[in-house]
Amino acid sequence: MIEQRNPEHIAIIMDGNGRWAKERGLKRTAGHEEGAKAVREITKHCAKLGIKYLTLYAFSTENWSRPKLEVEYLMKLLDKYLKSELSTYLENGIRFKSIGDISKFSKPLQKTILDVEEKTKNGKNLTQVLALNYGSQDEILRAIKKLNEKNLEITKENFELCLDTAGIPNVDMLIRTSGEIRLSNYLLWQNAYAELFFTNTYWPEFSANDLDDLISDFNQRERRFGGI
Ligand code: IPE
Ligand code: IPE
Ligand code: MG
Image (cartoon, rainbow, N blue to C red; front, side, top):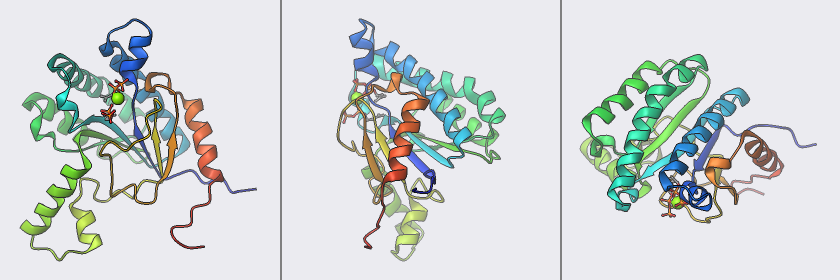
């Protein structure tokens, strides 16, 4: 019997909201709304399982290329979600943290993000990380600039301290929903030794049971990290 040892850090590329909606004759925005419910369910489930870090890709540096109305809708949904989730975070001992360059967001949205980070900073169970205007290449370039500004020696440790994910362990398990098999500029450094999982389920339908099944698969895999 392989010992059950849940992953410490799960990262998810939450994909397929638009296709989920389209297949039901709904607008893409309805898919995003339903996707937010899945975020709540999966986050609470991870807290219950004792997972320490859950990093969710919510808006990429490339997503600005979507129609203006969809981008605006996503920004509003994010603001609404964070405000309504505050009580869930506090009740479940969840700390919320963002990664990505939020300086490109509106001032009120930036304030909501920073407020919720501040109010949940003592959460001791799960850290829910939302990747917001996040792109791995952008993060790496910003990290190099920080290294330069601080005049730090170029070492793995110093570099990791300058990434948005400073202090967060590397990803153990990367999941992408909706059948797409690519990384889309997500946590390229941090996924160096992640186990990869691709499922055809669209994000709005991804359930706690689906996650349990993937974690069982994870627990069957042998991670060698270059050894034998
Ligand atoms: C993922 O779903 C959510 C975001 C990228 C914000 P999509 O909106 O990419 O849904 P599809 O891939 O078009 O179905
Ligand atoms: C990746 O999904 C970004 C998020 C889930 C936020 P996309 O739907 O934007 O990725 P591509 O364009 O299909 O690679
Ligand atoms: Mg997509």
